[in-house]
Every structure is written in structure tokens, then in C-alpha cells.
Image (tube, rainbow, N blue to C red; front, top):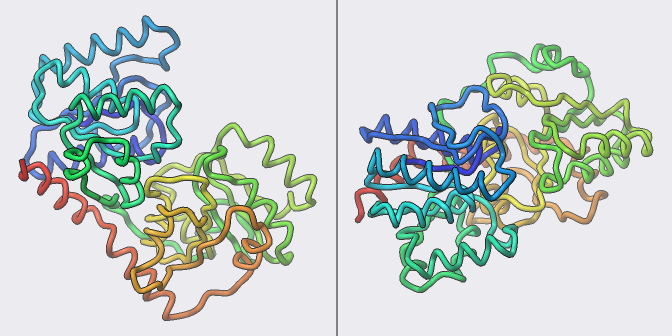
Length: 359
């Protein structure tokens, strides 16, 4: 069983269903479950059951989720449960333990210090009670969260990077790809794919855009609670004509969007390992990322060569300079290809299958 907190068009739910599909293709019998429904997931890789049809609003809703999960586990009796996101991990591991599920694998997808105080306490208690039998970190930096866990569990923690499943490059040339989204046919387009939320830090890119030459444009694909603030900021800085807000882009159109832009930017305040960043690398794009450990781990090799630039979160001027720079030619292309080759679906599935065979 692959258990995830909620349906949502973001990295962890998409990765969970991608893993479910890969496990089935590897010969396992798989059931994918979400604790509750938050929003539709277009083009999901695997069918999934939702225990509650809406975001839980009351203690009674949480009780319904727990009872339904118990019944689901008792009916299907999986050998292993793999849990994505904090609520699914805490609830799933403890209910699964009571239901007699032997292996309960907790997958770190977001930094532990972003959990609420209550969730951090519940997570730590679950670890010390033995409710988790294994831990997977989506990046080495994620496993820093294991510091709060008992030594025996830390010793069983492994890193399994994300991998892209059936990820195609666009067949459109740059002009056709730009026309598809109504984007300018000339100029330099810097693009970011992600929710317009505090985590993704889109306002920094708008501030940087205001310091860029006039030929640089910014493309933001995604929706969220910061939409109006982003628009107001662009208006106040006089760059509204160079900011292109596309809203949510269907997954099958994302390769075309990556073909339309010249540079990918992701100034996130925190990540696990970003699927959008992996998609940009596989599309051959130079990438600008924030200087958080998870992003550095993806973009920069052990030899220090980077598939783009790592930039500070508090320096819009540095981002502006990087957004305006031209690419570095064949050497950079080779580095991008090397980094992309490390994060494949096949490699991810080899690691998960090895973990499932190990104990």
C-alpha cells in the first residue's frame, strides 16, 4: 500500500502515484490510498482510493479517516505500507502497526522543521514507539530530520531520489512552444513552475525581474494564494507587461512550456527534491535555484560543477544578474545532461525494489 495525505497537484502526491505504478510494473500487487480529497489530480499515474471526500474539518472527520484506514488495512492486509507526507506517516504508521502490518516505511518528502509543533511531536513519538520500521529520504538533506529518531531507526534510513516516469521532451521548436502559450516570440524567457505560495517564493522573482533588462520576461505557471500579491507587486514595480501568469498548466503541456523558456528558476524556501527541477534538467534547461541544501544536492555534483547557478534567498539583484546572463554553451549542456541522468525512474525503482527485498 502507498498511503499519501491528500490529493493535490503537487510533488509528493504525484510521486506517490508514480511509485505505485512502478511497483505494480515490478510485479507487486499495489493499492494506492489518500487520507482525504483536496483537489483533482489531472493525469495521475495510478488509480487511488480516497478515505474522505473533503479536507477534514472536525475531529469526527479525522476519526472517520482512522476507522476507514483500519478497515482498508484489515481488508487488504498489505505486507508493506509506504507513507508520504507527515499526516499520512503518523496516522498510517500507528494504525498499520495496530493492524499487524509488518513493514511501515516512512518517506521524508518535506523538511521536518516545516511540520507544525504538534506534528513534530507526534512524528517523534511514532519513531520512538517503533511505528516506523524504515525511513526513506528523497534527498540526503531530508535525512537530517532523522536526528530526532532512535539510533536503530537512523541506521536503517536510506536515500532514494525522485525519478521521472515516461518524461518526454517537447517536439515543438521554441517559436511554436511560445505560440502555444501566447508568450512573446522574442526576448529571454525565465520560467518557474510551481504553486504561488510562500514555499515557492514567487515574489523574489518579480523583484528580480524589475532589475533585469527590458528583454527579460518572467513566466509563472501555477496558482495559489499569492496570486493577487504577485500581480500587485508587478504593478507597483512597473513590470506587469513582462510578467506572464499562466495559471495551472496540464501535465501533458509542461514539456512544451519548458521548450518555450530559456532558463528555469526556483527560489524555494524549502523543498524535498523538486520534481519540477528534475523536469527542467531533463528538458536541458540551465537552472537557477535557492541555496538550500536540497536544491544544491540536485543541481551540483560532488566535483562542484553545477547545472546552472545557486543563489541566495535574500538577494534579488543576484537573481536579476543570473536571469539576464546568456547560457554557457556546450560545457553547461553536458553538465545538465549528467545531472539529469542521475534522477531517472528506473534508478528510483531499483532502489525501492532493493529496499523491499532487503528485510
